Image 1 (cartoon, rainbow, N blue to C red):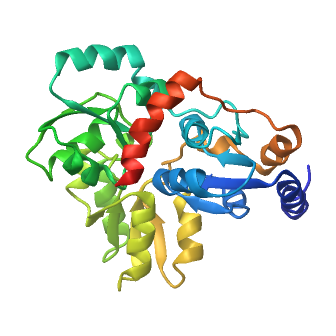
Image 2: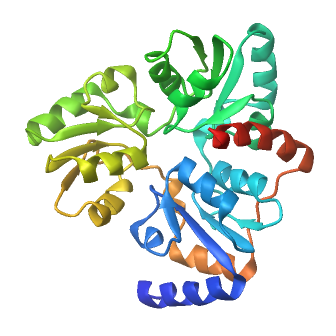
Length: 302
């Protein structure tokens, strides 16, 4: 197998040849993050997909992220190096299930987390990410909201609004498994460290944290804080970016086993191969993309 340096050089050459943009999520492997044009969370990468120039988008993440890029940039070739990298939470609701739920809550606006399929987005009123869910909930006109699919993010948003939120019973396999006992153990191991957790965590974990933030929000908080030590309650891939962007700060994982195996399916060989072959390519049928684009566009307009 080629070493990282030679693979990186080959990828950079192919990227230039293809006029490609590499968008990389914060949970990706360190060596994949290091080749990115943009590293970020779902909101940052959605914005980049919509605005950056290039003929090809290589999305180092999971399937719903590449779908979002394809919806926002239908004229571009969108590639997902690990074609089988899926988000289990996105599979916890289907378009048919959402249509039936709409009938149960006819007066509710549907706020759809971006961790969903294009078909579900097409049935929604507006999308959100973990970084802007509160702003989205506050922005919709309706006083009743059907929030899909992450129950924990929906319950977190409920804390900050008088609107009635009906959360779908979906969850993130990584964040939902973090426990209050792990928070207590981490505080005991690192007394004085600031605890940051992701809003996809359970309410009882959020109650024991010092700050709640998206992955990009965590990075901003660590970099600007006067504290020197932090306990990070999200997928451990973010620790690489924290180490690069927040020098002088020490970050510990809240749960060392907080690993999204789908996010780790992308490696440099797959990135190189996808630039060589221009596959696997992600496309979304036009009728679905056109409707989903409305919900995503409303989010980005905020």
